[in-house]
Image 1 (tube, rainbow, N blue to C red):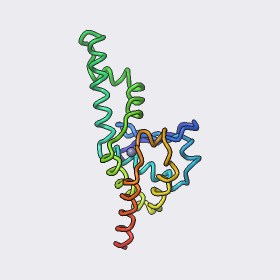
Image 2: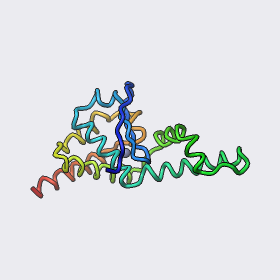
Image 3: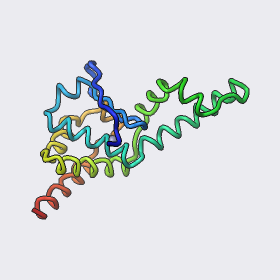
Image 4: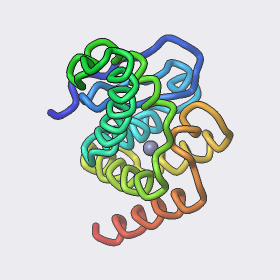
Amino acid sequence: MFWRFIQAYLVPDVNAFAMANGCMRVFAGLMDQLSDDEVRGVIGHEIGHVKLGHSLTKMRTALLAAGTREGMAASGKGRASEIAASQIGGLAESVVNSQFSQKEELAADEYGYHFMVRHHYDPNAMVSMFKKLGGSGGLVSSHPASPRRVKNIETLIVKGAKKK
Ligand SMILES: [Zn+2]
């Protein structure tokens, strides 16, 4: 299995994210607001970002930026590998705060849909999850929701139902 573990942060924030090494974090606030299947939808979506390499690309970009800064401060000693060890906390933070593109969101949603179907969870939970998280901040700020994303999932569900 690609991702190593899922950890829950016992904080009221409504958020979740996947890191480039395959770790996943789900905030307790998210689990309070959503049904089990809706949380599974979020996790499937996050796994999609990891599997499709979105998180990795973001991490690499953040590493390069940090490497440039550190390289100047440490007069040439700022090798990317050393920085990765020393600044991983800060990097994780910047990855969390960076937005995925709409294209990445749609691709991760599609992955999430197939994740739900494969594990016999209700893919409709992804639609209700979008509706519940319709506001701003938290999960929505790093994974911008849009009517197009809802439509995308609904289309997949209709197509999937026809196949049966
Ligand atoms: Zn996303």
